[in-house]
Amino acid sequence: MTSAERYVTAAYLVVLAVVLAYLVIYAFKLSRLEREVGELAELARRKRDAPPEPEPEPKREEVAG
Amino acid sequence: MSTSLRNSRAVALAAAAAGLLLLGISLAFYWVPDAPIEGFRQRIFYIHVPIALTAYACFFWAAWKALRLLWTRDERYDLESYTAVHMGVIFGILTLVTGSIWARTSWGVWWTWSERQLVLFLVLFLFYSAYFMLRFSVEPGPRRARMSAVYALFGVVLIPVSFLAIRLAEGLIHPVVFDRDVGENLAGSQLLTFVICLAGTLALAGSLYLNELTGKRLDARLSELREALS
Amino acid sequence: MRYLADVGTLAAKDLRLELRSRDTVPAMLLFVVATLVVFNFALPAGASAEAAYGLLWAALVFTAILGLTRAFAAEREQRVLDGLVLAPSDRSAIWLGKAIAVVAFLALAEVVALPAFALFFQPVSWELVAAVALATVGFAVVGTLLAAMAAASRARELLLPLLFLPLVIPIVVGGVGASIADDPGRYLGFLALYDLIFAILSWASFEYVVTE
Image (cartoon, rainbow over all chains, first blue to last red; front, side, top):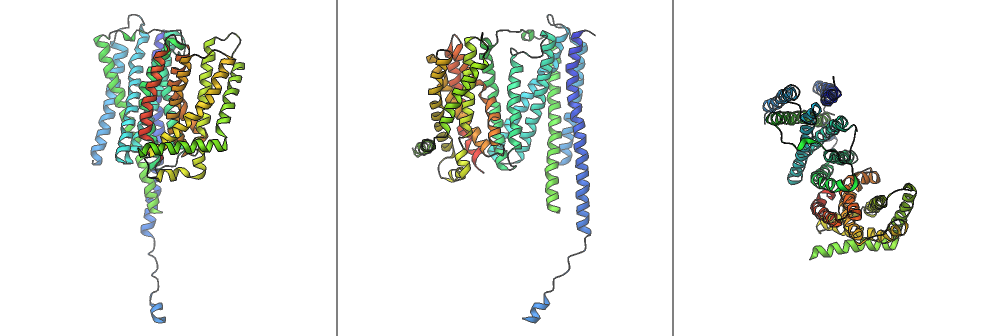
């Protein structure tokens, strides 16, 4: 491979490298997003299944007043 | 816009990028003849110049979105402008690197101040890097969105002004002038290959842009959801 | 002409403040002279005359940054900027008033810097003075807007040079060109063009930078 061919190929490879690096960074980001969605789903589930709030006691006041 | 439509647009763009780039690069290596003076090394042209033009396109896109933000006060455009600047910087760095490699193979130096395109991109790289500094040191909100938009507009005005300045600086500051025969008329095959590569890199930038934008939007909605649930 | 009256009032306020406190301009004067002296030691013995002119412009850029860093300092410390923004005048009047004050401060520094330069290094031609005048307008016009941005950030003094330097590269080219080229007129014309374009842009967009 001549010197010129080496440099030309290097230039194209750099572009490929950057695009592939972007893919890797993206994979990390997507896995983080997946994890967050899982956490939020868990949070939502817990809220839905949580026991209802105990009723406050309104009658007591009326009796006293 | 329904989700399915948005998805198919993104997929189509990514497919177009893949196809066009594959075709273009193959043509650049196998089909196009050697340049008369520069020889084989001229083939860097088919990736370097499309990437440079794509970077400009990203900066102009960012400025357009910035203008829309200032006009409509719709904060949706802030994220779009920011992502476009990010893409522009990535492609700008690629321009500098491929340009440097080309300079090395043409003239034996990794950098030269007499290559206008390279110098312009260096100035723009400095400018748009400061964009990120600005964003990271201001509290998120409508004010930061507006400041970023104004800065993006300044950037796009800086492009022609800097270019003019660099041309004026030429005879003045750096006596050594390297010449390159890109001004020559492109033969039919070369022009076609160039156009295909250009379309491919634009599609690639658009594809990465949509990807990143979706990611950022998801981030924002997830924080909203988190706040709503806790 | 209410607008111009507002501009005048704002500029006069800044000038009066500086007259009373005398902190920014003396610092700029001292800084530019000190920088020129440092440059004498930075230039090797056989350096050309042109190199000295280049360093003059570098000194002017950094002095401008010094002055601009202080531009909104007073307002920031007393939250006066919020009050000004709420005032019924056009926000761009704030920019114009401030820019005029900055031009005045820079001009005072240059009145000392140019003779010092002529004494230490090279003669100063009328084209150079014209270039410095045009460049001062350019620095003020762009720098005032950027200083307002930096004032709203956490990084402040760190941010302003980063924002300022790339944008003023054309001014440096124009200035150095007018100093050493055979046809300085071209460079002076370029400086004037720069000033016009960025003055309009800054004037139009200042409002978006300062309002909440």
